[in-house]
Image (cartoon, rainbow, N blue to C red; front, top):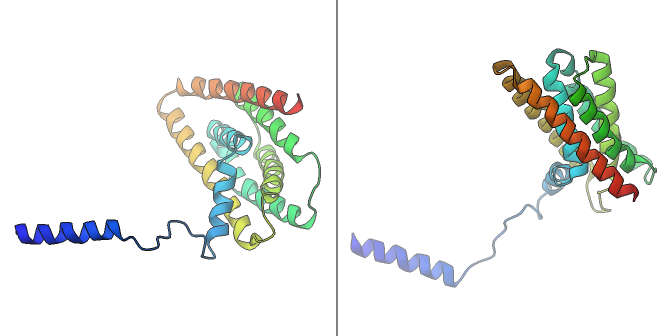
Length: 199
């Protein structure tokens, strides 16, 4: 038994002293652009904050908000495609910062929204954010993989946020107040980000 442990320790030591080539990332595979598309939006506050706000808005009104599960990913796909067809359109970055104010305010005020209003807001948000995410594509990026990555990230973000928010607010009525408080904080973050961008 001791001999086997000694041999294993020797093999392990040799492996540490003479390492081979390690591939920790998928740079050499065709799936790299898909993961780039998924990770790009969640590494920027400009995208992640309004996406979380949309999820919280859906949590407050689950019946009407479920239409955003279709409209938002569709908007993201349209936005990325629009960037590929018409690059360098102005105003989308500012629109994304304004969306933080709008969504944060809607969550804080807890206004009743119809299913149609949810669909329009979610689709417009998706187009704007999809366009800006599309500008991150390099000349070597495969848009057929990058765009679904962005869409998947957006769908999962709003789905998980809305599901968690709806679960908590159904179990504890006081959580609805916390949801509105989060909306006011999101609004404040939007004011600071917009002020910094326009300064």
